[in-house]
Length: 297
Image 1 (cartoon, rainbow, N blue to C red):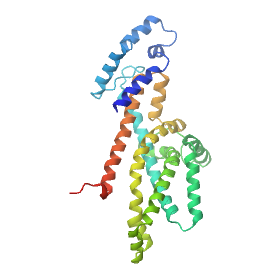
Image 2: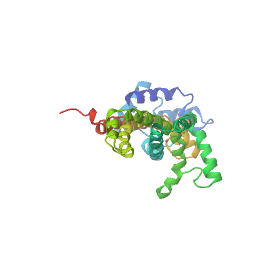
Image 3: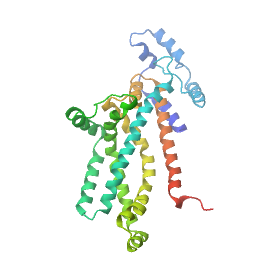
């Protein structure tokens, strides 16, 4: 988190342009620009700006927007973060719902063509950019069939229909990865001696799959999803532009265009916090789910 904050603070200032000039416009006088730079603290030495920013950050204060005077970075970032996390969370649910059954089917099917077909479709989906898939989904389900809206956002009970297509577009990346992971884990579990012994005792294959193969196949998903949270957030930024969602991607794009340093820094820090927290939660859950990783007493 500290490394991300330092790097973003340094890199954002390499972008050509002056935030004060951006706010006042190209026709502003040098005196007015200098006055605004002093008001925003941009005329202070670099080390002073760094110290001031991190001193406030340690108290949970990410400052105010340089462009929208009086508006806190917290309010701007958190308003968009809720939309982005809704899309990411729905994507994870869709991906698990698609990836686990098809992964098991691919691993345990006695028809060789089924395995080849599922793996081929997974490769095609994995190679398809989410923004391209999003455009295809809009064409099919919004313009042709009129089931889901083409974009926008609505709070409350109508939120679900606006998040389905963006989540489906992102799922085309995560679901194939889950299919491959579940397939590999199911193949390894099905070859274990305890599975063969269970089948030899007359237990039905369906019960063996549900009681033994499926739980062992689900273990890699915890780590897999935790590692891909960062990609899902970055992918959501692109998908939000396709579906015109008021998520963190829109906040970031506008802040970069307007050279709003504090907002860009806030988006990066909050996104990094989500990624770090997701990976930490994945490590904890993996130890809870898998008894082999628990310390012996």
